[in-house]
Amino acid sequence: MVINETRLDATFAALADPTRRAILARLASGEASVGELAAPFSMSQPAISKHLKVLENAGLISAGQDAQRRPRRLEPQPLAEATEWLETYRELWERRYAELDALLAEMQSKPKGKKRKKP
Image: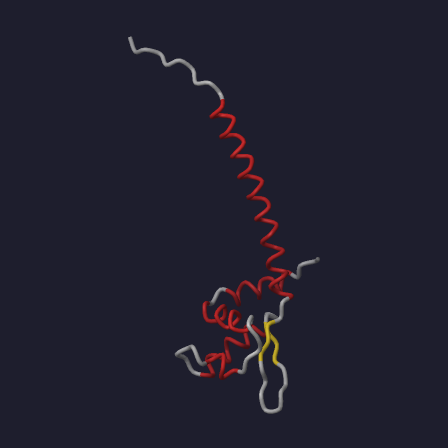
């Protein structure tokens, strides 16, 4: 998969805010209206709408059409791309930790030299 750097930047910028992460967590259980998404927060509906706009611009959510409602739903692709990008670094660090574990095991298995007595 080719990662779109601009979308990756937008994804991480959107995920940097705890309110937006909470909105995504709520949408993981199913679509919801703006009012339903705003309910747990002590902020105005326009403020929630601004958060939703950031999430929409990042491609993390989309708005549907259901009569008078415009329910929001989670879009998985940007999160999959961010996960793939992070996975590369996880694999790198796992290899480095495995090398460190092997070195430490080798050092522990070597017999210790005799201590010199002080004159």
